[in-house]
Amino acid sequence: MKIFFLLVWGMLSLSLTGVMVRELWIAPSWSGAFVLLLIAYYSFCFFQLIRAAYRPWGLLGPRRRSGYWVCLVLLPLTLLPLRSAYDIWLAGAYRLDADAAGPSLNLLIVRQLLAWLQELVGYLGPTLVLIAAGVGMALLLLRLSRGQVVR
Image 1 (spheres, rainbow, N blue to C red):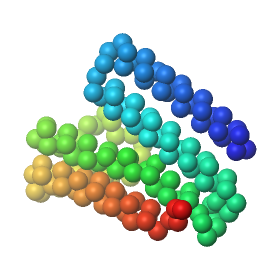
Image 2: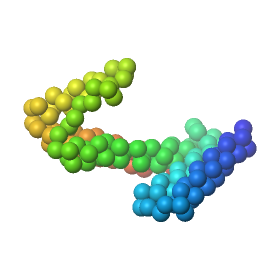
Image 3: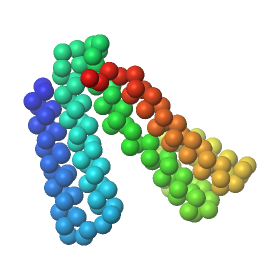
C-alpha cells in the first residue's frame, strides 16, 4: 500500500507541477507562481505524511508524526475565511448571493448569520467574524502541531 500511495502521490505531484509550469511558461503571473509554490508545499507535506504514516506505530505510537503533517496540510485552508473577509472589505458590504445557496443547511445558516450581523453592525461585522475564524483556525492548528512528536 505504501508503494501505491507513493505512486499516486508522484503522478499527481508531477502532473500538477507540469501543468502549472506550462501555464507559467505561456503566461507568467504572480498568481501562477503562488499556485506553483502551493503545489510544491502540498507535495512536500503529503510525501512526509505518507512516510510518517507507514513507520512502525506511525499513526498511534509514542513517536507519531502524522498529526504534525496533517496540521501542516490543513494550515493553508485557514486563508479562505481571510480571503472572504478581504472580498467583503473591498465590496463594502456582504452580498448574499441567492443562486449560490445550495442544499447545505450549515452554509445557509452561516450566510444568514453573516447577513444578520451586517444589518446589526455594518459590513465590519462579517469581516471581523471571518478574520477571527481564519486566525483562530490557524492558531488552533499551530497549537495542535506543537503537541505532535517530530524528531
